[in-house]
Length: 117
Image (cartoon, rainbow, N blue to C red):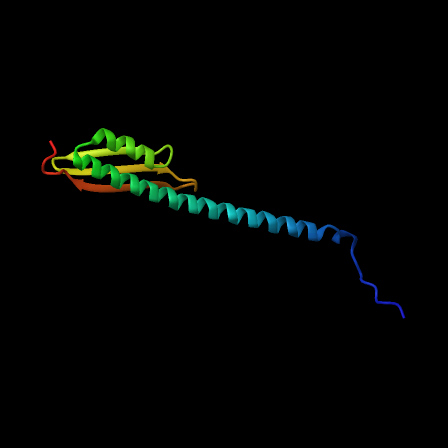
């Protein structure tokens, strides 16, 4: 007795290869998005830390050091804005995100120390 023959169309050759290629592409795409999301969260935390430290330094009376430290802590291409209004201090750090359409911004507020000129 002979085993039953499978009917195979000549157009089926290479079908598994195409499915594997699509699956690998989808996996790489998802992993790339995950890596970009993790980088975005890490950069936002760096912006927050930079704004907080800069606000503390400005409150102590060291605005030049605050700007330099904020640029050191913040991600590359970040902008630092320090606004003082009477005793109020606002520091804003902005940076581009690896994910398209997002822009990272962090703010910190402080009050000048009583002995600070």
